[in-house]
Amino acid sequence: MLENRLADHNSPIQRLDPKIRILVSFFLSVAAALCDNLIIALGYLILSLFLTGLARLPLKALVKRLRPLFWFLLMIWVFLPLTFEGNLLFQYGVLKASSQGIELSAKITLKSIAILLTFSSLVATMRIGSLGSGLHQLRVPDKLVFLLLMTHRYIAVIYGEYNRLLRAAKFRGFKPGTNLHSYKTYAFLAGMLFVRASFRAKRVYHAMCCRGFQQKFHTLDVYPSNGLNYIFLCANVLAGFGLVVIELVFI
Image (cartoon, rainbow, N blue to C red; front, side, top):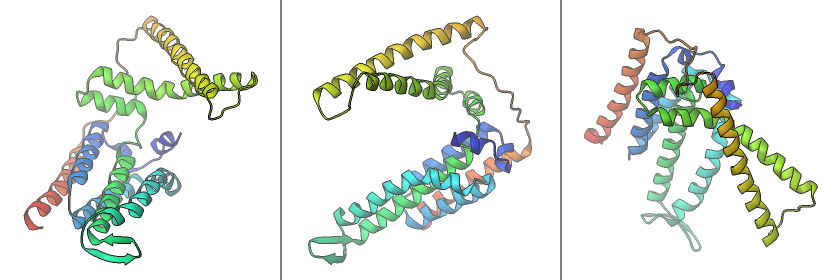
C-alpha cells in the first residue's frame, strides 16, 4: 500500500511524536482552508513544500497522490472562471471569463495542494498504529480510534469478499448491464456483503476478546520526549499564525 511505503521511508519527520504531527497538520490545514488571499495561500503552499522536503517523499508516490486532485482542479479551472460573476477578462463568443473567477480558481488550487502536501508529509508517513496512538494521546474518543484502526485492517478483506461474490455471480451467467436484473443482482450482492461482514466482525471481536483485548491498541514505536518535537510544533504554529496575522492586519 502507498501509505506503508511512505511510512517506511526514513526522514527527520519520522522521528517526531505522532501527536505533534497530527496537531501541526490540523492547524496548518485549517489555517490554509480559511485564508482568503492569494499571496497568503502561496505562503501556505511554500510551507507545505518545506514539510514535503523534510519528509523526503518519493516523487512518484507524491505525484500518484496528487493526480486525483489535479483532475478536480482541472474541472475548477474549466468551469469557475466562465461562471463566476466579476470583471470581464476576455470573451470568445458566448464564453466570458472573469478575473475574480480566475483568482478564486488560483486560491482553491494553492490551498488544495498545500493541504494535501501537509497531510501527505505529516500524517500519511505514519504507520496506522502510530496514528492511532497519536489520536489516543490527543484524547480522541477510543471508539473512533478503534473504528479507524479496524476499518484500515479489514477494508481490503471486505473488498476481497466482494470480488469473490461478484466472480461467483459471473460464473453463474451474470452479465452487468443497465437493466433491472443487474440492479437487483448488485443489491443482493451488497446485502450479502453486509451480512458476511457482520458475521466476520463478530468472529474477529470474539477472537480478540479471547486474547485479552481491552478496547485499546498498543504500538511498539517509542517516541521519547525531546526538544525537537516542541521546536517543530512552535515553529509551524508561529509560521501559520504569522500568515494569519499578515492577512488580517496588513492585507
